[in-house]
Length: 128
Image (cartoon, rainbow, N blue to C red):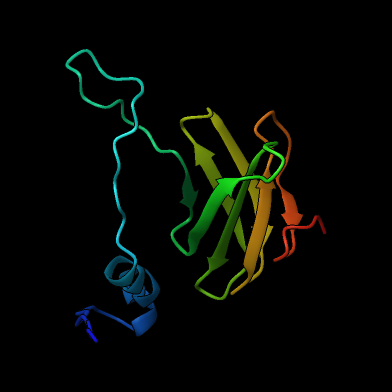
């Protein structure tokens, strides 16, 4: 068994240190894989994000293609305990979606790739 821990020096209260994000970086590292596609003139990968979420008090935990292939399912959670306007952006699709979440809410949205607003889903991925 391996136990990993991290000391997180910070100014102010523990909330300002964003321990939730530090935990994800430590325990769920991003794994990069090469995906053939567009490149710049010098052969480097084109800049951009498959998905990004804003503001900083929201974490995107899951993203997958919907079962019927008609959009993306994303799940995230709010970490600061306050109602927040969430923006999910895909540079690859050239789209953004916006919606409201409550403080500490775990939310699941269906993001239509052909346009339209996000559709709230329950944890069983059924429309609500």
